Length: 335
Image (cartoon, rainbow, N blue to C red; front, side, top):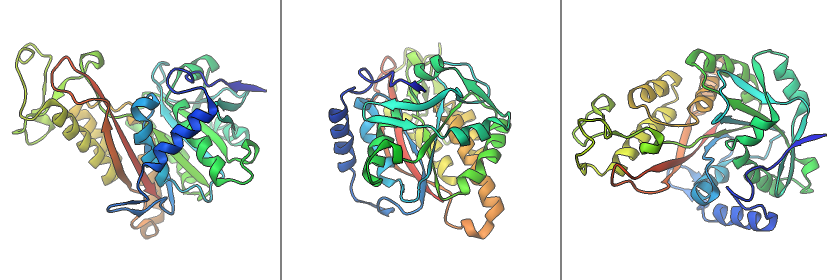
């Protein structure tokens, strides 16, 4: 039996199981039981979420909002889609066939080896080497939350009784590739026994991210945005609005496009703003799958299949061009 180590435990989050469990529960407890405009949570039928994947000291509290909305009551399989930060990948990749579990400080999460084998048989996926798998954080940062919640929702709370995990690493996919993978995954998304977790941070702003896009208050749209590190603007001061307010405005444009539910609309906003949403490709794959479900089910999807954002935070508030920040947003969709 081959397992993936919890390679970021002890650095990005604590490697002490009891401490980790207490942290996760404290963040979940901090989320109100009812959200304005949403109502009581968990939300029945909320089988899809978007949640961040930074170090827990930064994004753990924001991720809790998505996980508190998640409905695990009928869950048999957990699809976890995250972006590739290190491995050049033009497609989507599945874990090595030799892998049987992902480890966490709370215990193992077993992989659905049969379902993964079925996905491999489509020949659409490449294989993720174990070394690259363990170097990547976008999937791992969700595993403790998943294990913690499953231990509460399944009795007895033994990992052997938990729903099985289906990890998918999504590379720098084209719009057409996202539609192809959306088509492939749509039948699984339609199954009420399947839960989909999409891993993504939002704007990475600052010189170190090579992204200093700014929207002046007078700008009517992203076409009028400017780069604060261009020769023309690099020595100017910008306060109308404050830079962090511009960052939020750009993030909200992307979040609005996700909520509107049009895959191409989301891609269009990304093209116009250049926003550094690191999980834009896994988001795109799931949005494409949701569009296919709406086309197939028609009126039966009325009022369903659209994301709703419930939390937005940033690692810091940027005031000057030498500052930097990463944005974290949490959303759910009822299917």
